[in-house]
Image (tube, rainbow, N blue to C red; front, side, top):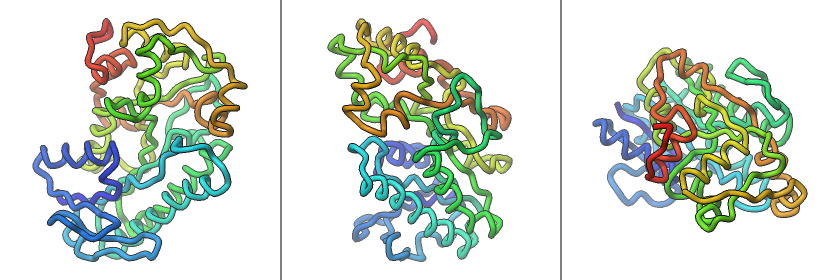
Length: 302
């Protein structure tokens, strides 16, 4: 296949490029600077400019664009940046997919599509969008793919959980604290903390690219949801460190503001029904197995 990737320089994009090339696929990377390599093509989503050569003969486009949700404290301008960095590129790419007749678009989204008010209720892809900033952002992000869908492209909406990676991702700010014995649950710990291993995040994207039966929303989440308290115990175990502390909700709100209630103190108990029904087999079906692989230690769950 020839796969065009937007957002190829991020953690997931870099890993995806490597995996596609390892499997023998051709990769074209969209960059927002002057192209400096044979596989690079310049685009400017703000101006809706895209080098037409990039999509020539393409079998699929993967869109991973978007500023970091937890990159800095939210305010009005940063929330607008979070929206613009997702909706504008998606609209440009979906329109280009439609115009060039590219048959497949895999577009990033987020598991917080379901909002934070789901509590203990299990949600899969049949659940409606929730409320709040992140849920609205994900809903609008997915809606921006409509030009591709209307043109007949098989469009996959990748509702990803925070990814467990060796460098950055969900574990980036946590590992140093836990390694020092300063880990602990957040708030009351009863909220769900969605997760997925990097290998399964990449595996889900590759599966979506190569299986024609996969379309619409898919939850890229680990199949065994855990509460924050359970996540805390598993991470402490994987690092062989105690995790006795509690960060109260008021302290989290003071530190990170609105983000605390949107993504830390609340989380959906999401399961990957669509992926599993399509035949995808998770490499890391439990949080223990995922953390053991990511951190590089043995685990009783493996």
